[in-house]
Length: 272
Image 1: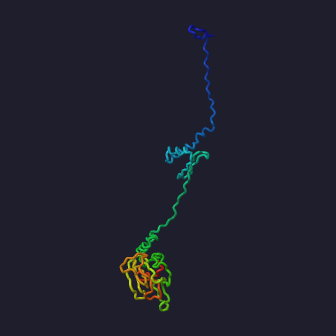
Image 2 (image 1 turned 90 degrees about the horizontal axis):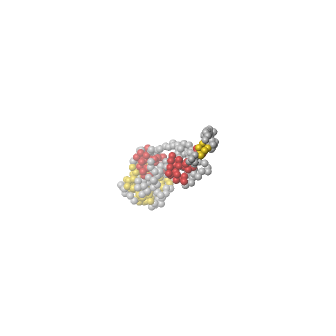
Image 3 (image 1 turned 30 degrees about the vertical axis):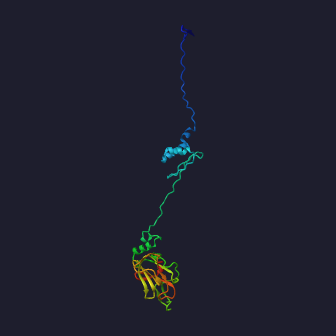
């Protein structure tokens, strides 16, 4: 029961009611079972930016790439694959595992003659001659070191013992290689060198030209109708030095070509 005071306030006439007790709620609220899974999963946008920062591209660049909505493929040299994003993501990052690289066995030839190329045949010949004595050069090493003295080589009579076309006797030693050629066909130097002889050869060679290639290697050109060089002249490989003919001990127009090593004739086919 209350009474009203002069000022209009009511004053309690009985004891004040006891305060309500505070009840503590101790029961746990139910949690979302997939909350932790969602927290652990990074969005495609976050994956691209994190990957860009880790690989050195930069966070801003990674954000720009992710914002485009394009698929970004990055190849990273690693020992294991990088996990890709979900199949339905707007952007994805994949990495290709680099294959193992193994070095196979390689043999390097330091022989001086192996350094040259086919584009420099005179260089090959020079190195061949300077690398060892010309007398000890093998046929395998000398093959192809000299050029053809004619544009076309058609053998008429080979190097070695044969029946003499002049006397008809057997057992004649042929000192060079005969090649068929019409009279007046250009004859060229088999390699660069110095002309050491031009003129008449008294032992059946007729008009003759001799070129010294150095280190004991010489080539001779015989039965010529004329020559176009002089003694002491420097000639280059393939340069015209004479015209073929049938002078001297000859039965028809052809070129008798010789290769001499330290003054002794050898089979020209071992050098051509």
